[in-house]
Amino acid sequence: MLAPYLLLFVLFTVVPVAISLVISFTYFNMLEFPRWVGWHNYQQLFLEDDVFLIAIKNTFIFAVITGPLSYMACFLFAWLINGLQPKVRALFTLLFYAPSISGNIYFMWQLLFSGDSYGYINGFLMKLGVIVEPIQWLTDPKYILPIIILVQLWLSLGTSFLAFIAGLQNIDKTLFEAGAVDGVSNRWQELWYITLPAMRPMLMFGAVIQITSSFAVADVAINLAGFPSVNYAAHTIVTHLMDYGTVRFEMGYSSAIATVLFIMMITMNVLTQKLLRRIGE
Amino acid sequence: MSETMLERAPKAGKAASAAGRPNLFRLFRLRRAKRVNHSWWGNAIAFLVLCAVAAFMALPLVFSINNAFKPLDEIFVFPPRFLVRNPTLTNFGDLFSLLSNSWVPFSRYVFNTVFITLAGTVGHVILASAAAFVLAKYQFKGKNLIFTMIVLSLMFSGQVTMIPNYMTMAWLGWIDSYASIIVPAFAYPLGLYLMKQFMEMIPDSLLEAAKIDGASDYRIFWQIVMPLVKPAWMTLTILLFQMLWGTDGGNFVYSEQLKTLHYAVTQIVLGGIARTGAAAAVSLLLMSVPILFFLFSQSKIIQTMATSGMKD
Image 1 (cartoon, rainbow over the protein chains, first blue to last red):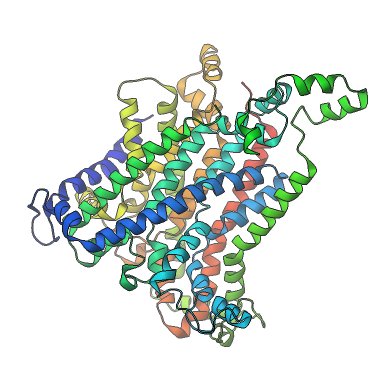
Image 2: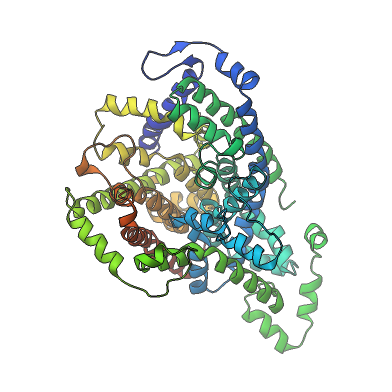
């Protein structure tokens, strides 16, 4: 029963990833045959590419803020929603998941943060007298990063949120009855001693997904701040990768960027998994 | 709060005091099926917080619905308005007249998208669940290696594997076919990982009991494991449905007859300012299908949970 899946997985995931790792040691412009350059791409990446360092810094800021926050938000809201009546629960799940479903979300944020005095936030602040001149929210490097973090957080109740809701419904109900008999007396104890340990497989899943998505921020940055953004203020590793991969067609270099990102994500995951093992102890 | 969470629960204390109370109180406890008593004000605060956040999260839905019914002059009004003043159906009329003029019949795009979405979702859920079952409940050599590879692959950036994938497709002769979109979807790592985590929550003793009763592996999978993890594969179905519904054919499909709805819609949107109204209408239509599907499967999940609980 494993074979058909595994065959396709190797063909469409393992092989391409392996090829891409090899390509990261070559110069490949998609017209000529790849030319072996060894560690050159990596050297250039860390020693000569200043923009890459900005991208790494931004990506880390994103990941460190949005990763844990959105992870906790996913669980907290899933947990609260799970306590509701079935029909209400379905409605709330839909509303919370809405940003992930709808397509033209960026337009709304562009309206809000529009840089002239007609943008909602500028208009509001000017009416209050907090500011006199409209703020260029999406082009001023000072504001871009926080705004993208905000939007990213708002968008982040996606895959792991749904998985958590399903997971909470799959917990053996007798555990709670046994817990009540054993003296669990309030909802926080119930959460810590019963719900969280029972959810551990799901929590691991959520952590992987959340880390992956918070390190791979690109869409929000591109749609709100443009590509490339002013002074690379919203540049992330993935936008850097897209710059070299789909704009400059330097596939070797772009594969090297992907490899660095890959290693960063793996490191973060190992750390997080260690942390999660201690839940409910 | 954090203090009480970290302390060990006082054993037996509460249970003993409840037992000593008059009958009336004990009846009340029994009716609650021995669940911990959640304070009403705690529930109230939780509900209020949920409502506030939900209202905020619902903004894009409200905006899309309003936008689709705005007459052109309201769409272009400056400063832009969030809500519609004079709702109209002209956008939908424009959309249909636009679509009926296109070179490839519109129904063809609809068919392509529906076919890709359904085939891809069904295939993925079945293949990923079967593979997850083996990984979660059987011991064999190389099992951990396979699982580690699947989790790791989730973390590799997709943009750079596009070229190797293209070469694979070309080698298979799948360029410009439905297969180039559907078959890779069968093997997304996400679904296997999700299903495996859920299946690990099923107690082994249940499966052993079934085995002793003479059930074959396939029967255990279809009649015991799959019904138990219904919320899981329903969730997976929602995720896959949504993803494939939004696919545009990518770099593998070139003939117009095979393009998807999403692609056709993007062409309309790119048509310029005159088509902004139609674009607003179409984005609402495109969005409503995953939403309806989502609501439908949510009610299915709830039905299952009402009738079957997992008991060891």
